[in-house]
Length: 225
Image (cartoon, rainbow, N blue to C red; front, side, top):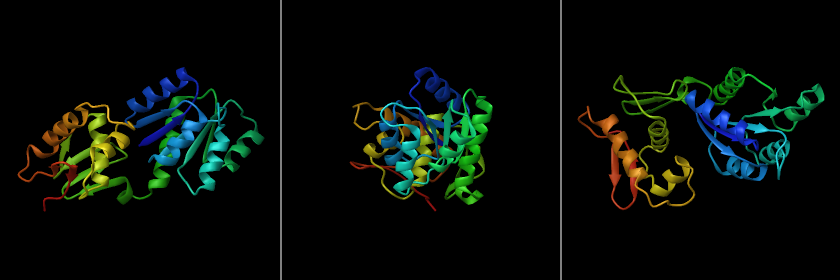
């Protein structure tokens, strides 16, 4: 899952980034409320994990603005404020769940994964298929023609984005923004390297290649059948 963590405490944020990554998810971090609201408004995330007390824009205000704009991305509020009235206020402000600090990460992870499943719904939505290539967003597994393909986290995220945009040309700028979270071109060959590694894994043992390079434009994943 793509998880946006809006947390101003650097130590707490670093822990969450590491823990969610080790659990197989793709976390993105915002260190204040304004940046968090911007990322939540412009990015594609499965779940938001929002600290309540934030600089520039507090967590509840972020959720109110998102909900007013019609954004229904599920959100879990983290807060040291744990009284009943505090929890009720958080839920009424747009939170889908509320967890009081301190917390056990195992519980946080379970709650976040439940929110992600609740939104994606049935198996058709949790599984992306392009021809004989299948990606399961819950188990983070990839198969082609029933054959398991082992991917590194960035390769998985790259493939997921390409599959969600199957049969369409995806530009380098789109990949930088959606897969690497860069909003500028760092002038590196990072995309070419990862695309090359991904192509080797999903195409090397098959007669028909799926991942194409569109010269001067970008890349396209398509069903050769």
